[in-house]
Length: 362
Figure 1: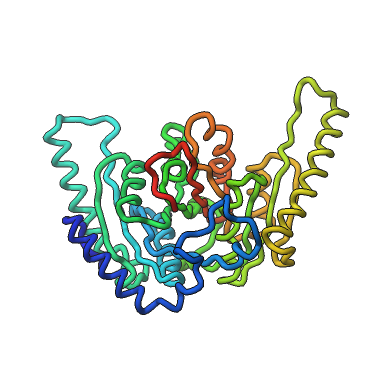
Figure 2: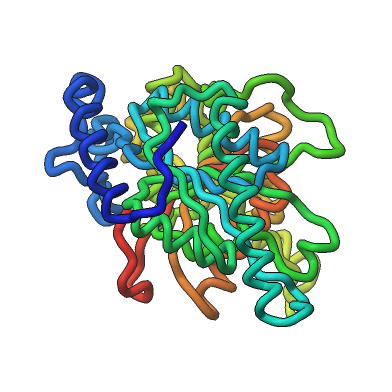
């Protein structure tokens, strides 16, 4: 299995040695990455050449597990990605405090000790139970605290390039507390791949393999949204996938406009969006016929999910801006709404912004 995380310094040393050994054997896979090792930034994506040369380098993948069936699917996806990108997996289980503590602090300590023992025992068989090769697992860790905070902190400490986690969808608990996956996406220091929970509805069965053949890549034409372009094109090249480049013109009904005025305004916005899409397609993808541009008018989150469903997409790729507060409310809500209703896995590309001090740039 993996390495028990009882000594973080020893684990980091062991992980570093594993990385160096794996890197030597996988150097041919990693060749061709942008000079300097860093992905193109949104501001640096000035040409299709930069997008086409980019190679994904997901060396460290953090996989939060809660031992649910959805979490098992997430781990299977993570294992498949690790095999494709020469990555290491860091498994994390978080023991959250009870919502209503009872019987005093002594019993809380006993409760945590019992849960830690059970989790440690479960982790021993968790990787092998999903068919993962032991060589893929660099470390396992058990933490105590609020899941979203511990996941983000563990990602920082593990220098994670990607978090792969399951989403447990909607429901009563989601309405009260919000989705852990949503909150991780909001605060993660790196990119996040969210695997949807198909409990209670039709979905894929059997071992889960990450091999997308149909991608939906979204853009709002902002500089920040360009950060997702190189990842989508790199995945398309690696897996031979077709890409739908999607922009949705928001449909509004301002009170001060007549119905005719709304129609005229939407027609103007649609015309401008199509012109901008044509320029974007040519500038960043050189008019590649495998990148199919689509412009719609409607509710962005709803139409993104509907398009993905109609195309039977294997993956939605979106960027997030790393904002908090009002900026997050305005810019991040589309990402989170898509996350709640996406019919397939969703890759959220982190674009660091000035109002996120201290975060490691992905």
